[in-house]
Length: 236
Image (cartoon, rainbow, N blue to C red):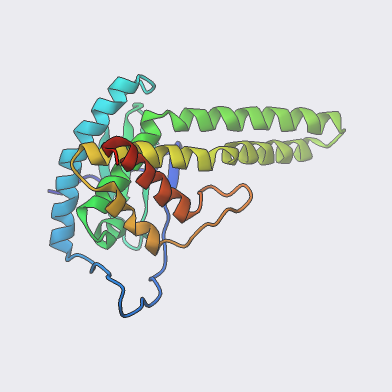
């Protein structure tokens, strides 16, 4: 079974799972799960989609934020694409979740794929794309007003509007990621996967740290968010 290639879309919450280099050498005592063979990776992915998608759609309908809860799960099979997953909306306003082949191949287990799928679905369920658009618009309008009041040229006003939109959109990016981590962990857990084990891919990602206006929280904070969510759901 081959899922369709994702077409380019303008509305995108991309890079939730960013590309990353090979991990550094691990101590001899460390336990590292091997990369799966291609066939096993594909089978894991299809199993994860079959189990997680209906749970995500049920959560989507229950939350009542998104109008369309019919997720379309696709694979970006363009050669050379780095490991990545993203959520967007197609021209029919249908939510789309994309995985690159590299991410599917790199996943060490089905739990990682389930957590990533739950996380991306959570972005749509929580309405993060329209919220980010609203924030960007508000930031652009405010920056434009201030730039005009300062007597800047039209080109400078446009530059200020672009900067204002970017700053405003990024101001809540980390909050959105943590919210999607928590809801995505819950979706994966209900679907029968272990989201704590699923956060193992964070150990292979460069840590974004806590940079000013960074788009992602530190990896340790995201893992802690998932662990806290699982404890809350399962109890002590």
